[in-house]
Length: 295
Image (cartoon, rainbow, N blue to C red):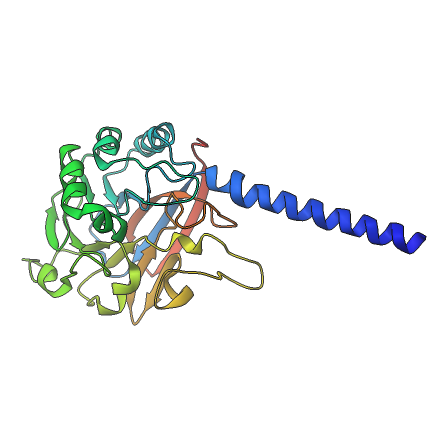
């Protein structure tokens, strides 16, 4: 009798644990957003330069579960509260066919993003989902919101604290990426930041680039203790899943993004807005997440 009661009690505890984890993974965590403030020191950043603060936002997936118009407005407000020098949007603004979602057209999304502004500008590249819908259509909508689209292009960002280049590269899967062509447009030796949607391009990025930034992976959406990330949409597995990656003296930062794809689940991979401060120094990173808009 005692063994039966014990077994029943353990069974109820297991059921409770599974229920709590399910609620967290499919309801609470996907609905969160944190502002992840990251300070990154780059040895290739000139010592005479003042730090520059970039807001990175990726994988909005407007209309995915928990990514409503109100949520997007809250994200925009949180970005503006940080007063970044420039804002870089890393693709996948839309999404199609997500369970529990409600498709939002790029034309309906654009007015919400039009509230974004920064002293050095707001820039964007397209992601694979944008191309799967209609890349030209998404680009037109974003341009109507005042966002400068830089796929396979380079822009010189002039500022008193030290000018730098922002190089945009087309999506690795659908955007006909042209790294060599875009880098060839750098007409002087000012440091360069490369922005693209999919981090799988990183092995092809030359040393001329001080830092690459990307999204796309969602950090795998699920990060299990002792197991890792079961699914990461990358040919390299977990290699470029999230955070700072340093390879052969080159540096990449991958944000886990805001929305979800396939299933509306997040576990130990909280949706984020990244405020990235770049300064000169030895290669190191420090981060401090803070609570952001919940919905």
